[in-house]
Image (tube, rainbow, N blue to C red; front, side, top):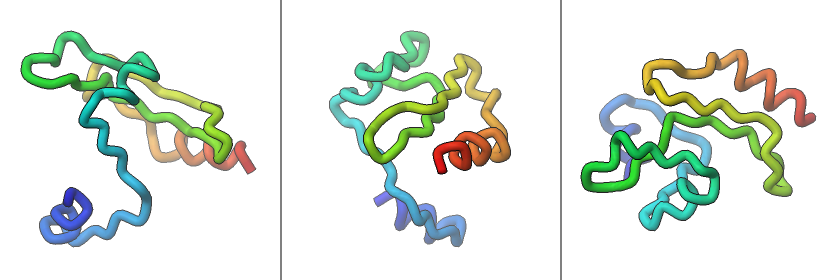
Length: 83
């Protein structure tokens, strides 16, 4: 399991759920498929969603360049606005 591997390799404990998407259902539903990276399997564009408990997307960050990511502060602000 990825959580166990991260804990063993990096000493980090992941305290949130990770999504496995072997059938690409989530990639397709949210429209984040990256056609430039689809050599053997579907790969999404780097994306962060802030979704409430009812499943409503309140904030999203989608980027084509995998090196560009939102800051922790950006994500925390979006999460804080849900409260």
